[in-house]
Image 1 (tube, rainbow, N blue to C red):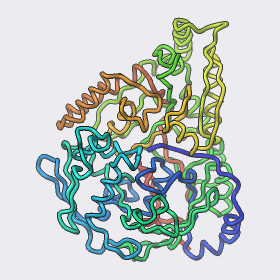
Image 2 (image 1 turned 30 degrees about the vertical axis):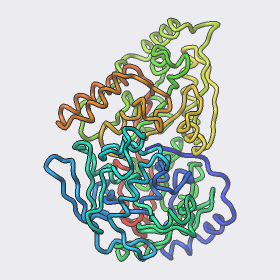
Image 3 (image 1 turned 90 degrees about the horizontal axis):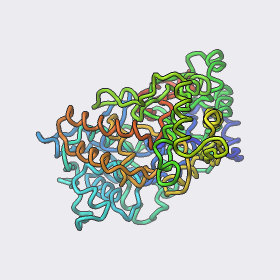
Image 4 (image 1 turned 90 degrees about the vertical axis):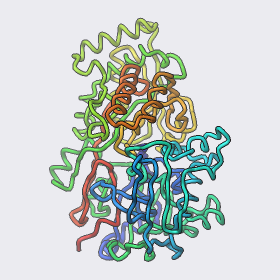
Length: 533
């Protein structure tokens, strides 16, 4: 899942009024929470960012969900069984699962939604997440004459859904916590088309319903009385604010206008800890901060150039000084704590001295034709936040030491990631990936040549692709891990993307917010928290 943050435009009058009445609102059970930025869409089948995922966890419920501890627990499905070969899953749906208009949530709703997600006409960039389902890849790619009706999902009866897989998939249950597996209300989609996501048309099966969406200001959700567990949902209203101006978000938090933020300005970590104590929360997160290199254009198709740029980066300085110790230096694409894996592949110069790295980088650039009088000039594209800007400046200074001249292109997050997703041109681009499920495949699949939605640097290595296919067909977890480790080693050697840091979750959490826990998944469902008086 893409980590996307962007600078919000100044709040409009409506938001100012909301803030001015904050004291009254807090007494009425209103949860004010910051979010990474405005969603590009709330159509679950077209979303891809962390900020969108936060909203959708409140608005919709899949077969299974994440608890506040980040564990997989029942959602619409109250129980499930798996065949002995791991290829057939049967989910028993709750009898009291309802849409917000009181329609029952049925197995057919999931059949419709999963088919819609994989229908190439939908244009879902995240469709390949569901390729483990039988015939999903063929349908989505339009190969072998596969029809949407051939997808391995069927309603055995209104409360029983059966999903057939291409092969046993160790992470399949956790995969279903992702927004690609969320149901949409068929009648609303068919009646309103793309406008089914507007507040006046919104029908959801989650703990909350969409009431207001004012771009650059706020998104208001109200408790859904038809939700099957509505009696245990403590907060009546949650208001999300786009808060990628992290310094402003910290000020609003300290003023009591926000109960929760999704990030912290790195240059204020020390002072905020001194002022706020344990209201500053930092914990491990399943994500990596990358630089994508456009391997489809010169000179970034040259592994020597890519390695030189990577060698010159002082990851420890960036993690400690720029990010205030809230991130870890990254020497591999896969973060720590990943499931279904062993030792991760890392860059071979991890323990080399800075001077040795710099000398090697200069030699590599010289062998690639760059040096005095012929500097490597690159354009670095990133989405604007304070933390990203400081990181970009530091990178440019470190590259300058090896004779690289850097210019910048900055945009808001929505524009930045749409540009990358849609195949726009760039030299080097900032990227963040948060694991959708705890498995190395979810990071390595980013580099597959046919993953057009996320392989923005157009990396193409037939050997790597073959290993990923081999791993997908391997049911023995130990053998599969060994195959993925070999694929991981290719990426560490060729560096089509340069890993810079491993993420941490960084939240400011009000003492009034009860039930909050940080977890590797970064899941913060509002239904599991409450507000103290």
